[in-house]
Length: 246
Image 1 (tube, rainbow, N blue to C red):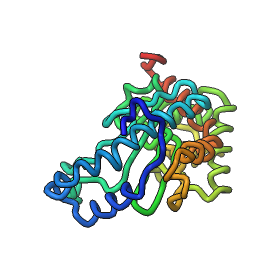
Image 2: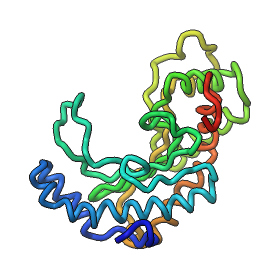
Image 3: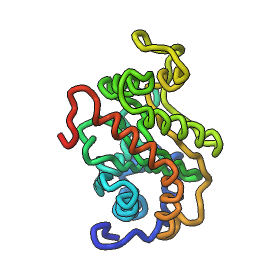
Image 4: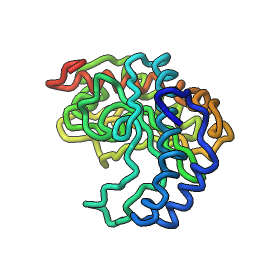
């Protein structure tokens, strides 16, 4: 499969058998012996998905930038084990992110993301910022405590938190035990304590994942949280010393 010339046609059952087998054989020797399977059943369809899903997301948020390459939208399968107690060299899931073109300079997952994570028996779909960088965190806290910015943006964050609760979705992001020092306490104290704001839905693998309809399946779940992406995009790009598009 060539992701550059073919539209996404779905993942295959071999995708999930590979991920199951990798979990039981998480070592370099096994992976190298099955590298062709990884390329054909995981990497290539994932890159095609990036292109097709990216086009669909651009209809919702024109500044989303699909990056159909490993290290771009598709996370590397190799784990960074330098500071981890888990020394397994490979991830047993496929991680795919869609970033904003004006926030690409932010490292890791510090900018707003649409995110898809595919495992052997589960799917996770998320929207938001997993962890604010220091400049963005300052801008976020000043917004939610009313020190600057628009009350309408704060209303969006509260609405998204309420929507997630109604849908039974997780709201992730490490949080402090109390309002950070130097910021006023108020009714948005819960928001102010957050160091990230990421809403995630945990799902069983849908039948759509085996065909092109998986793009529409994900788009349907992303759509309600587009206001969150756009709000956090504004926060990140308004951070001190940061200019949009640079």
